[in-house]
Image 1 (cartoon, rainbow, N blue to C red):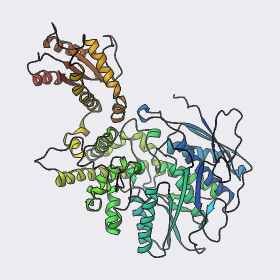
Image 2: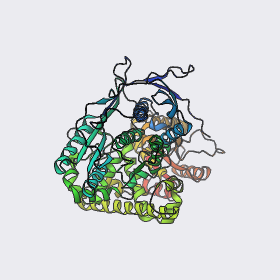
Image 3: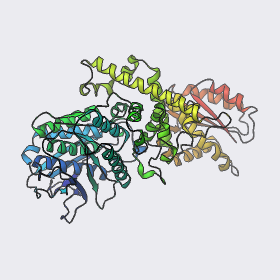
Image 4: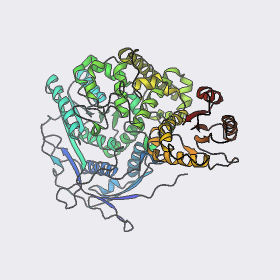
Length: 618
């Protein structure tokens, strides 16, 4: 069992904390504090509510500090992530107003369990100290509008993305009363997007749209962690506070089911590496916490759980298609250039671009929105290429699979879902509904790719290398990960070896292998980024009796002097027998004197044996 990492100690609201704490992280938001390093800005809810209950004020501060700590504490580089890794242990000491309530075991358990599941971190623990006070309205900015007591309202999270926009329009068109939008604003581009869309909605639905933006950021500290898994806790805490102020026992989270459920696309996409911000279990655990705070049942609904992204876009086309280009899906807006609002290469951008073509809504999603056009341009970022290949592989797998195979393949994922999804009375019925969702998603992605090829492929021109269309045309999504890694390594070695040995040839095969190993190590970050689920090693130091655990091995062969091509062939045959069947071997054959008469015949005969690739270099 993996050991729990040593905890990071976080002290907030001037909490004392334990005497054992060495170099704890101190977080403070109150402006009068000399060490204020967190900004929490929340609007006053309604004109006649000049304060919130202490318990809810505590919740807002706890959520703000958890989010700040999440941004402050680095998980580690992605290339170091394997299975259970990349998780942290964080221990909070926070001064609160209602210390008796927050110190109850059932409350701290509900809080910890919700955060541990949504973030994938190893452990969250909380200790609450008494004595915290603030003026009744000291936490809040000035109100920008007032609401009449007793009027019908519907509270929903609003990010400015396609899903939240679709849900907002659905509420405005199908329900009476006002729709209250809750937004987190931290970047200027996000603020501009949300405010622009809200302005359009207010014009179209006069006096029915209310917008509560809030800010929570680190102040004077550079954020080191970009995964931001605790955003869901922050968002929903604000929505809960607003819903409570309006006397509501429910709010809405509009996110399509494929994104919310986020079934793993690779084995290493587990725990902290896979986003669970709107996963049904996350939402269920948060609803349990809010019910405890509320002293009665509280519900969080996921109305789009059985919709795909393409379904969402089709719905928007029938409502307000002009807003599609204004909605922003990108999670890496800091990588945009010029007038582009999307990086084009993050998972959300890939999902959006493909779904747009599935819904035949590409005219509302023009090229200028994206810094990188993955369809027709080379995807030079290695991690982005993996994102595209994994996305296509998984979706087309759903399109070609069966319900039985789906259940078997994702059994552990489905077990974490079934107790928290509303549709169906039995687990079998729930799994059937989820299979329908993913089958639909797979068929839509298949349709989208065919549609892209009809629009963009020019049979008279080669496809740009590493573009989405070229990757699909080369059937990269069908290749085993080991073969893809071997091809990437070959592309690194091939142009470099000739230059490396143009003057001084290697002494022997061990020398050749040593230099190839050094070359590969300089590209380690790239290889780990593009192929994080496959290990590799040079085989020069592995004796005959050892069975290596590496997925991909590199064997160098040097044709020189008395070493003939036939002897190299014999050596390769021996290696294919020596190494385990699960290993894929890249044979690098250095033939500076052109003693191999036919490269194609030499390579084809060997590669026909399977689980290997031959690279001949000179």
